[in-house]
Length: 125
Ligand SMILES: [Zn+2]
Image 1 (cartoon, rainbow, N blue to C red):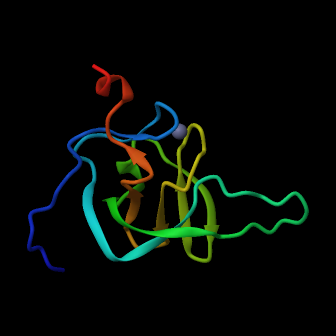
Image 2: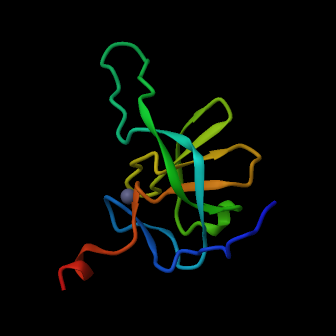
């Protein structure tokens, strides 16, 4: 493993984008840039009325908060599992995926883009 740059931890609490649920407390996760990108399905998959199929449309994301243990999360849930990838969702409102976890990888990834780092109230001060 290379360790060129000093690891960057989250200075602030990481929240769900949609509700006040705290996903990560400050200094609990390491920033990681996945240059090759990690595929995440879009939020709120549309389920078809007929049949069980739903399209796995999504995007590749690069910037994540990474923890190695599920217990490093303050709150986290799982939405669905595809092959050996478990997708992470908010534990309270169940919106997601906010990140992914490859089974047995010890890399739980939470997308910076799918979460927020400051409450709206502070921004309006
Ligand atoms: Zn939520």
